[in-house]
Length: 177
Image (cartoon, rainbow, N blue to C red; front, side, top):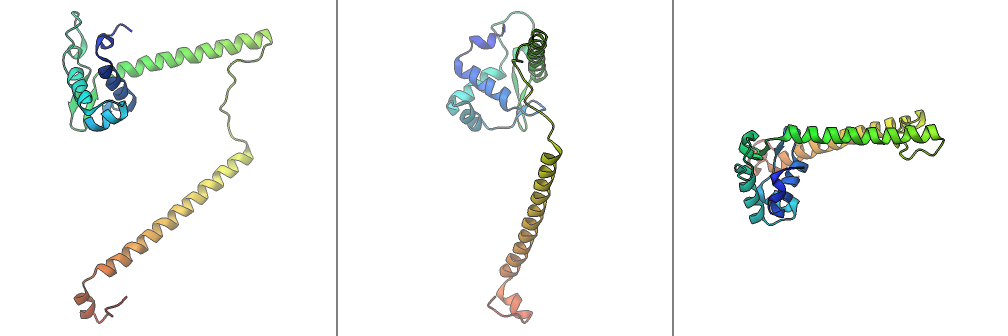
């Protein structure tokens, strides 16, 4: 890639690549500088300096660039990766190329009577496996319902315990529960 990013110090590159890895679908990195430093295995000071560099115009390139070469922008929830769609599309194209390479290699192997180098690993579950999956899901739902009910009962008991002794006495309830 012909990006001027590669001429930045390693800690800037690593922080930016970390941001690309942890950004949400809307291209926002919802982290503090401290959290970003932890994820990128850099110091907080390096992460803050990297954020400042990535937020600034790129002065290394003379041709016009989107956002003046800025890679991120501060937003309310964190930082917006400005070219997020561009990077997502790069990954889509590369993933498609990889899929096509594997499919073509499999096709050539089958035509030549050789073992397929990239066998499919994903398959639909058998009827028996699907029944087991459905039963496990049903048990999980039942367990969640029971846990929720127990939590509600616990909250009610806590509410009774938090009631002031005078209020319980006014209602004629015992001091000890």
